[in-house]
Length: 388
Image (cartoon, rainbow, N blue to C red; front, top):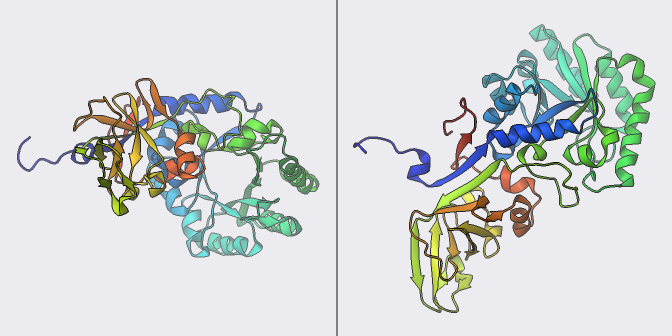
């Protein structure tokens, strides 16, 4: 390499994620195959598409005909617009009234659950000269964002009564849909239906939605006009209690390389606080990934990785930039060897739910925590072949 040339990020610091867009497309097809006729798919790409890279994921799905996307904030919505996504983008989270004009100007749909939010959007719509487009969220038991049932009719009428505001959707969110045959989920659905029954005549152009990934699988009667799917698109399930009825393929594989190998005698401590002390001679390998990358300290002395086709245990405390592993006896590990922290190598696999369980997390967390220092490489897609 000539002096002054810049190494690719994965070569300078060998930690990267491989994102299989063919698996993503396959998973979207699997979800769509079980939806009721006429039910649309909203792809939830908030939190950087659960760590996968929201622009690349959204573009790949958009090319497959998915035109509705869910994000957490205006900032995320604007990233999608800049990436060329012209479909519906719904902010599922809260937006400060100060950004109302930006939401309207860029054609972003905003979740509302209070009349004061609608009034702020009405005022901004007058200034911009375009109508605000909203989805009204109803809180049927999640006790999070959304109009409580006692105020929902008032909020719905406010959203529909003024020309400056166009109500494009009404939705709710289930709190326990990961549990099959859960009476609480059925009760939430019935509450939602009862609320909307008196307004059916004025809701012809309004999209009704309630089902997240878990409800898509466990409660098909809740598919309505649209479903909001996140984790299943990426090859995971919300919880072990959700049956694996779909052929979902992991989209992300997390990899690193060994950057140092040490032979240590009995009595040698490893890492901060020497929380691990070798009882006998050990081989310790070092990986350049740590909690600053989202590989959290909860993995310390619990998680496993795969090196040379064998599982190896994370050893000692995970630090900001490095993680140590104990090399199994007889496995000839060298500097430069590829290590899989999530995904498959040979006959061994580190599964997402397994990784989550080691840290006491839900399956969403290990993916969503993956930081920007990890290079992403997009496979099976010519447009997205470059690292970001």
